[in-house]
Length: 109
Length: 266
Image (tube, rainbow over all chains, first blue to last red; front, side, top):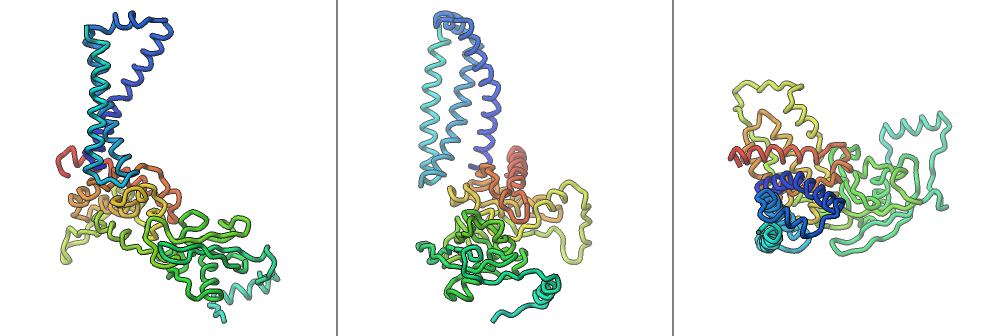
């Protein structure tokens, strides 16, 4: 971990903190209202606001988790910085693709 | 034959006057300590010795007793015996401690002591570790003072109540004992990590207005293995015999290097 990675990890944590809170509130709201999948999709499909909200969430998660996994790999496995960075970046890209796919599934009309 | 210093003889005579009982070596288990000491180098084993229990006995006294009376081949390191030099740190019942200022009565469990070399450092022999990595990292963290004035110039006036001096003073009393380094999980996991003592030293210099080496120093501690590798477990401040708080110093370095990075200085 160097100062650049530290900055990105703290920055993405700061972005995620309010997003997680809103996400949890949305889950509680949907569950308590007894909304079906169709009800939810009716609200999210074509919505620029939800696309931006969850799009930002996915990017922040991918960056944050990627840096965290890199640290875990360098500290817990006998890996040098570079191979650990390659593995962690691969994991981050995977998270980004899976997340983007999930967001597309709920916001694309 | 044990030679008593003037102070020890004085204490002995005071005890006689006060008719206090003096602990004598006896053979029953209540007056004896069972001490396991690490013998060997990196590979080795714990060997057990019986040491007489005495009043106000320190862990260093116990190790010294074994070396002088039971096994002269035991290797360990000490110098001042009064908590100033930082040479005598060892692992005592699982925790790194300064042995000259650790009373047996505060650490022995059911009359037992297990004493090993410091963790996270290669063992030379028995209780003595190779501390080169520890001190090399002080150099890597730019722990040496870089003067900003020449000999002929006036001495810089330092206000003791200035924020920078208060921050430096809070961290300055390190005795280089290596206890924080031995206690640190991050050092254990990451061989490149500079460690709490070196970073704490860097923090004192970052706050020293007389020093002119801060750009290089912040660059050194902002790199991989520097202050940002710290997980803030706080074992260093928990076990520091000088009650310093290296975790707080490292947090200060994290903030300082972050701003320096954003300004493009590191």
